[in-house]
Amino acid sequence: MPNIEYELNEKIHAIIINPYLTWDDFCTNCDLIKKYNLKNISTSLNYLAYFKHYLGNYDANINALISYPLADLPVSFIEEFVYFAKDKGANGIEYIPNFISLSKRNLETFAAEIEQVKLSGLPVTIIINKLKLQEEILYNAIEISLELGIKNFQFGDGFGSPISSNDVADILKLIGNQNQIKIVGGIKKLVQVIDLFDAGINCVGTSNFCEIFQEIKGI
Image (cartoon, rainbow, N blue to C red; front, top):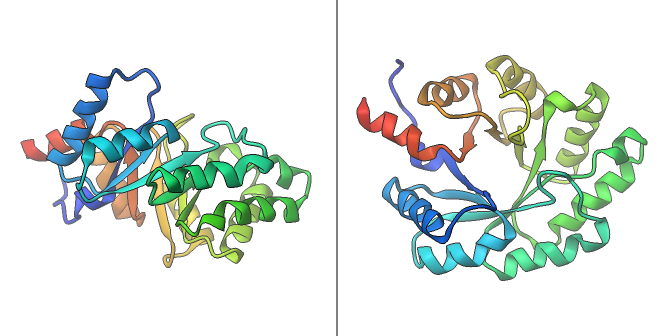
């Protein structure tokens, strides 16, 4: 196995979105986040207040997932949801836009939606499932996001096949090295994490962070 040269506590993002967690399970996840000194968390709107309460002064970026995973949030509600996340202590927004606008060639509608998400001033990550989009829609989504100043992109949403290193090469051609790329979906092993970092991405998101750090400890 290659040498690990990455600050994995910064680069591995904990995803806590399971709606069926018990309170004990949630607290266990918080304790594991602190144990492994993870610095980035992605979670639902409902869990934001719980994280702020339980983690206290622990230093971590907590990002709120909005319109995830179905992109089913009407545009008229976006501002309210985003400001709710900010009021509850979110440090960033992770958002799936409505791609059907692009399939109808309503590029301005798609752009206006992303501009609504940016209103809070929080950093915004646009979530894209490359494997589910037609090439033209994928290209337009990325181009519009970049034009609007989006610097953070997540590829993969936890549904379908995991992103491969070949997919990463294609993504880098579209995004460029100057922006942040996070990969999510099916990441359960340390070797997957290393392969993705070697391919050129910046971070990964996984709910299996404990298992991965246990692997690291065992090396």
